[in-house]
Length: 468
Image 1: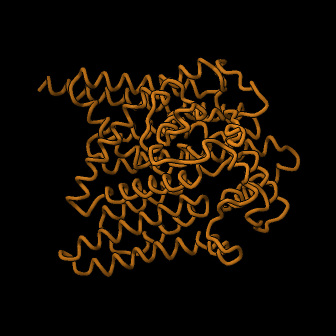
Image 2 (image 1 turned 90 degrees about the vertical axis):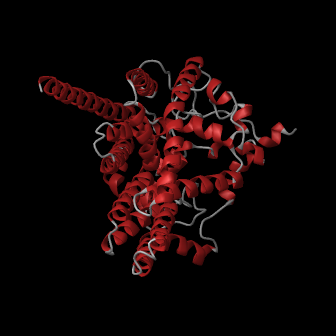
Image 3 (image 1 turned 120 degrees about the vertical axis):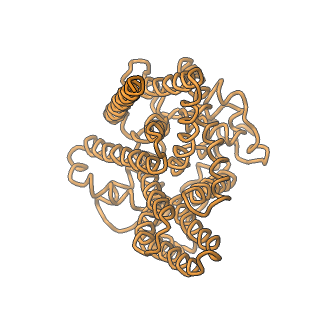
C-alpha cells in the first residue's frame, strides 16, 4: 500500500512538472510571436505588400474590387475586409501601428487554433494526459505557423476557421448526433473559411463527405441514418454556400469563372523557374531538402514535396530568415532532420486511423483522412497548374494542422510510454526540435541580420534568360 501511494504521488508530481513545463513553452511561444510582430520589417512576407495595398484600398471604399484591380484583389475578401475594419482608425495616422495591430490579431487567431487542436485531441486521448500537450506543441513550434503569424496574410485566419469546422464536425460525428444545429455551425465555419481562402472550400467538401459516408455505412443498422445524413450534409453545404459561396458565384456571373487563373496582372509568375512540371517532380526527395534547404536549389526546383517539407518545417523561401547565410543552412539541416520524427509519426498515425475508419463509421478518422487526401490532391493539382517555385509553400497546407497534430501526437505519445530508453530518446529529440525552432525563428536572438537586402526572398533568374 505504501509503495502504491508513493507511486501515485510520483506520477502526480511528474504530471505537475510536465504541465508547468508546457506552460513555460506556451509563454515562450507567445512572447516569441509578439516580439517577431514588432521586429519583422513592414511589407515583408509572402505577398504582404500586395495584401496590405488591398486592405488600404478597402479603407477608402468598401466596394469589392475587380479580381484584376490589383495583385491581391482576386483573393476571397474576408481577411481583407476584417483587416480594413480593424486598421481603419490607425492606417491614416500611423501605418506601422496599424500593421502591428493586424499582426497581433493574427497571432491571437493562431493561438485560438492551437487551443482548438488541444481541446479536440483531449477529447480522444482517454487517460493519456500528455497527448494534448504534444499536439499543441507540434503547432506552437511549427515554423510555418511562427513565420506566417508575423506576415500580413490570410493563412492563419483560414487555417483557424478550417480547424474550427473540423473540430465541430469531429465532435458531432463521434457523438452520432441527429440534430441539424451543429451541421449549420459547421457550414458557417466552413463558409467563412472559404471566404478567407480557396482552400476553405475543401473543409466543406470533407465534412459533407464524412456525414454522407457515415450515413451510408449505418444504413442497415439504422435505416433512418440515410435520410438524416443527407439532411445534415445538405445543411452544411447550404449554409456554407450562403456564407462563403456568394463570392465565387459573383465571380462566375460577372467574370465568367469561379476563381481566376492566369490573370494578366500575375504575368510575372510565368517568368519564375522552373516554368514546367514533370510527374517525376512528385517523386523526388533530394538530399538538398536537408543539406541546402532553399527553394532555388536546382534539385528542390524539381522536388515538389521536398520544397514543401522544407517550407513547412523551415523557411525554404527565405522570407523570414536571411538568405545566403551558412548558419541558416546548418540550422535548417538540424531542424529538418529532427522534424523527420513527428513527420514519420504522422504517417504511422494515418495508417492507424485508416484501420479505425475501415472498422467503424464513428469517430473522426474518416473526416480527418478525407481532409488529408483532398487537401494533398488539391495542392498537387495547384502546383501542377502553376509550375513556379514560389507556390511550393507548406503554409498552403496549414489547414491540415489538426489532422497532423492528431495523428502525430497519438504515435509520439505512445512512443514516450514504451520503455524508459525509447521514451527518453523521443522526448530528447522533440525538446531539441522545439528549442531549435524557438531560437532560430526568434528575430531578436542576435543571430540574424535581417536587413541584408532591400527585399526578402530568394533571388531568381527569369526562365526566359535561363533558356538563352
